Amino acid sequence: MTSEVVAAASVPVPGRAQRVREIATDLRGLRGALIPILHAIQEELEYVDQGDIPVVADVLNLAVAEVHGVVTFYKDFRRTPAGRTTVAICQAEACRSVGAVELAEHAKRTTGCGLGETTYDGRLTLDEVFCFGNCALGPAVQVSGKLHGRVTPARLDAILGEPR
Ligand code: FES
Image 1 (spheres, rainbow, N blue to C red):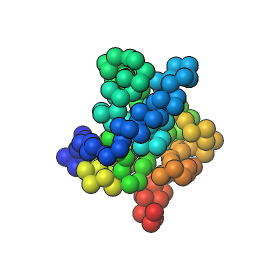
Image 2 (cartoon, rainbow, N blue to C red; image 1 turned 90 degrees about the horizontal axis):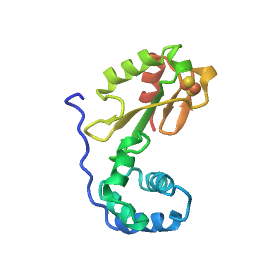
Image 3 (tube, rainbow, N blue to C red; image 1 turned 120 degrees about the horizontal axis):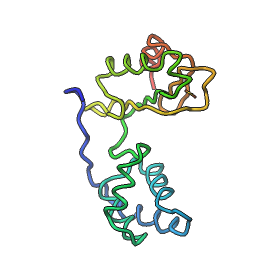
């Protein structure tokens, strides 16, 4: 981790616990409900906060440690709010064979972020993803939800320089 990056402390959001309880209650009838509930929380509330864990555990009648274990095991679950711009670089085999590793190194150098980290000012989050299904056009990068193909370091710099 560079000095520019910190783990953002989560700030309690009014009404969040109530909304998490509603989401968990709505989905608890699903088979293997825990994962879909966590995905739904992340989709609607951006990340899975530490404070969400006991609420979900209570609704599903699970141990807090069990829910915590799942949240921390799966890299899919973001534990802090994402930056205003999110950059996800594919690191699966097809993209690696055409320069995705070097692209990720370039992105780390220029943003000051490691993979899975957010800049201290909340400007940008850098992540790795394992295949967008865009393998013929690697290296593939998703910037704030928009997928780009054949991304070189120079092209990534240009994309990040565009107004968003
Ligand atoms: S391997 Fe990168 S998009 Fe499939």
